[in-house]
Image (cartoon, rainbow, N blue to C red; front, side, top):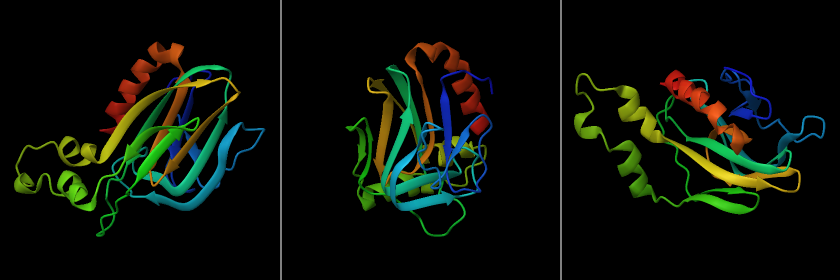
Amino acid sequence: MPEHPGIFRFDLGPMNSPVMQGFLPLTPESQYSEERGWGFLKLAGVMAMDKKRPDALSRDYLAAAKASFQIRLPKGTYAVCTLSGDSQAEGTVTRFFFNQSLSINRKEVFRNDTKPAEFFQTYDLQNYRHFWLPGMDYHDTFTAPRFQEKQYIASVDQDFLQLEWQNFPLCALIIYPVEKQGELAGELAWLQKRRK
């Protein structure tokens, strides 16, 4: 993966889980430090899981009852890309997260209040009628719908960008200046292909 100055890529999960090429590991032990310029300010009720599949970036995640992450950045406008979800692999008990929320610089940008019945209909049972059809693309049919890719725009005017989330299984985080969108287009396409 090519290097682009000023672009930060984080792969979230437990300390010993694999890290996608070109990404920095972000684990519960990654407390904020002035020297590094990024890390957690607060982390409570942590759930850092490694589900072994489907790939190094989305196999693991870090959810918490309360997570507060800070990164020092030059003033400007930034894109914040998130990959969230749970593959539900490596286990017989389905794990789900209610009342999910994500805030950037104290402004809520995402909320998911899915109820239990809706969760099972949408994510667990939507393909039960044709589970064994031959020729089906397993990734597109069963894996991809369990994840969400989002992009948000945020301004930094006080030297820091802060993210706070609750019950949100965050797998990956990419932060970059909006003027580097063109440089990132090829990388993001490569990343999607690599994950499939």
